[in-house]
Length: 125
Length: 139
Image 1 (cartoon, rainbow over the protein chains, first blue to last red):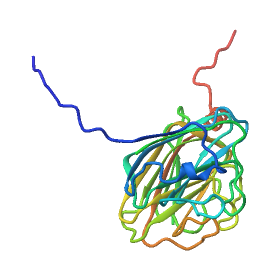
Image 2: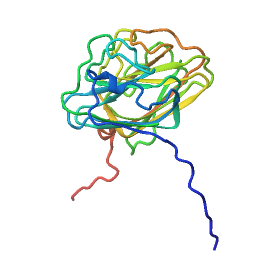
Image 3: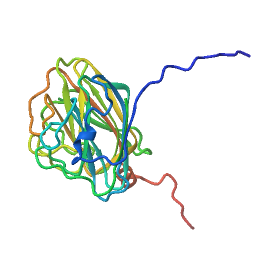
């Protein structure tokens, strides 16, 4: 028999961001959610099970963002009544911060509507 | 650009699309209908600029620059990133293109060769094309 002992590897992600009611109107709480100016995103979960309309989680690599005028660097879709999880094991680097907002509005240049019911967002970074 | 779409096996519902050089010319309805998206592999290792892959999953004939993408994935220069969606995301039709900037209206071509590989399932399509392996008959 052979016995191997392996030390636990360093945690992949060090920060879990949880927004229990992600929206667009209260955008200040979506600014710089990781409280870091640089790092990597490993997982994004958008739990839209409470809504009958699809939502979009929009992410800007910036210390702050203004929904409706800031152009998001990434957009993640969650269908109606579904939860969607996007994972990236190697990590996606950001260089200015992670600012987020969640909306039912697909366009970036018009007023961003809030989801009707609560949408939970989790980000591992 | 050259797009190839192939099923893994006829008995499986999974299907893969490989675009060897995704550009600002849109690939429309690559899976010929609806399905579920599981992963998007963006290979920008030969690219000298950040690129943005725009996926349209709720409309059949989107137009780059005027239609609004449902998903935008950023890939920095000289990197390869593989986004996976373990439980999948339903689509009615999947089209995609790649641009230099994130704005929906942007149609600027990417720099360098950008490969995009997408894995999806199209169980409904597979079921429609099934042939029975065993036919039960009565004499």
